[in-house]
Image 1 (cartoon, one colour):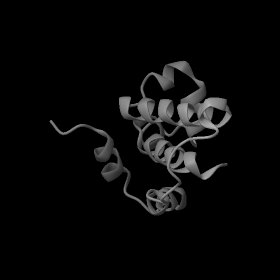
Image 2 (cartoon, rainbow, N blue to C red):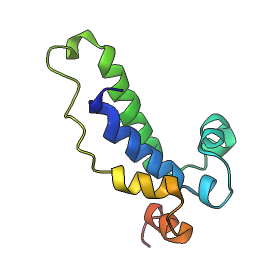
Image 3 (cartoon, rainbow, N blue to C red):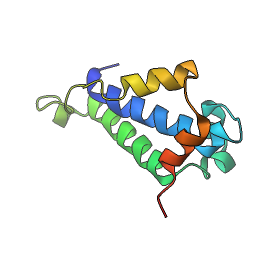
Length: 103
């Protein structure tokens, strides 16, 4: 995958893994994305990150952006968080708090 969309993909994956659908209800991220009822329970932040990722992917085949470039290169900003979540080295309650707005 081109590096211009890597950070967006990783941030979406982190958001999806922190969602209630995955952490509390114990569904797989794939199930949360494919089932319309489960997808409706995803936080707005995850939906926005998904839309940004899709827009980035569309930009890869858009001829108008070929000369200017699709976007900034990947910075690796989310790599450490993503690795911890993938390895299971996290507290689910703390991760859930990160997606809920502070009231």
